Amino acid sequence: MTVRVVATVGHPVLREWAQPLDPDELHNPQTQSLIDDLIDTMRYYNGAGLASPQVMASKRIVVIEVKSNPRYPYKPDIPLTVLVNPELEPLTDETFANNEGCLSVPGFRGVTNRFVKIAVRALDRHGKLLERDVSGLSAVTFQHEVDHLNGTLFLDRVEDPTTFTTWEQFERFERDAFAARAARLVSRFGS
Image (cartoon, rainbow, N blue to C red; front, side):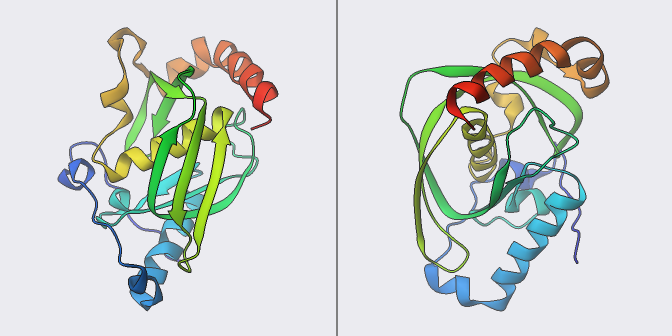
């Protein structure tokens, strides 16, 4: 198990456009090792996902997994998903006001508006084409992680700066109301 250091806000790698991978690079042991390290690091820190720029590797790779996550008990389970060179497309104009946090912005949260239904197109870790529609709170997670590949942090998507809060104050004052809204979204979409 290799847990890598997670870059935090202010590190230049988080503002770079990550480089796409040639499908042949997926056969490279270093690329497979990076993917394994992303998974190990995400799980170690109880993240819902992790993008390679967050571990200072500017490649277009994202890993996502939610399974009874203690940091995000309101998130539905998402099986381990590896996305290489992902492309997202909104399938609706409807958005959800998500109270969002990030391992690269420790202890801080803010409200972003994310599409509730998206199409995902990417390669998996073996180069096989992956195409699926993702909805509900899970769609929010996919959008957050893919933003990292474009040098975008959730901080950039917060329209109302009065929604910024520390994790501690979110838990104290906002978590219950947010969890109830999230539950309604999950019940609508099943994810």
